[in-house]
Every structure is written in C-alpha cells, then in structure tokens.
Image (cartoon, rainbow, N blue to C red):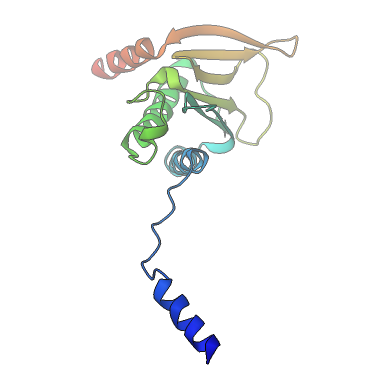
Length: 175
C-alpha cells in the first residue's frame, strides 16, 4: 500500500508535456547544408563530392565543398561551372533559417565559402600537363590552375567572383 501511494505521488509530480524538439547543433546544421548542396550539385552538374570543411570556432565563418569532375575544361567552360556551384551553395546557406543564428554574417557572401574542383579525364585519369587541373573559389577569388611539369599546381588566372560573374553575363549577352 505504501508503494502504491508513493507511485501515485510520483505520477502526479511527473510532467507529461511532450519534450521540445532538440535544436540542431551548429555542426549538425552546417553538415546538413553542405550535404544538401553537394547532392544537388552531383545530380545537376555531375560534380562528385570528395570533401568538405568549415571554419566555425565561435560562429560559422566559412563553409567549404570539394568535388571531382570527370571532364576536361578550359577557363571559359570552367568559370560558369564554378560560379554555378558557388551560387547554389550560397543560396542553400542563405535560405536555411536554422543556420542563420550560427553565421558570422548574413547573408553569407562569396568570401565566406570555398569551392574546389579537381578535373580529370572522362576515363578518370589525370589531365595532361598544361591542361586545367584545379579550379577553386577561395576568399572571393576564382583561381584556375594547371599541373606543371614539376608536378605542382600553377595558377594561370585569378579573378574576383564579381569579375567572373560579369564575364559570364557578358559572354551570354553576346550570344
């Protein structure tokens, strides 16, 4: 009988309200945004995700994605691919309300993301020396690199994100 009274008091004292859903952590939110973007770029642009990164000690300062791409490109065809990937990544970040409290600045800008693409032949072999090997966007700058005879990447062109967008818009308006 005394256990029954104890159990009854215990039940009355319990709160049967449903628990608030757990808020995703900064890391979980960043991973979800990167994964959604990587999947979208794989499906729409044949970019194969091969890495990701971030800078987020306190706030999220930077998010990064890396891809393999199995088609040789020249600068004029690499530029729109790089800018498309950057724009999709920025759109995914800036439209996700759950990540906003963690961002160092909103909206996130090209200076806050990094995209790197490693280029290969369609048969998955390395492109020849002198051909475009790596394209990336880092700190708001687009870089186009070749693999030199010394087995090192050499930047053959560097331009701002804004200049790259302007060149794309100019080339499409002339067609």
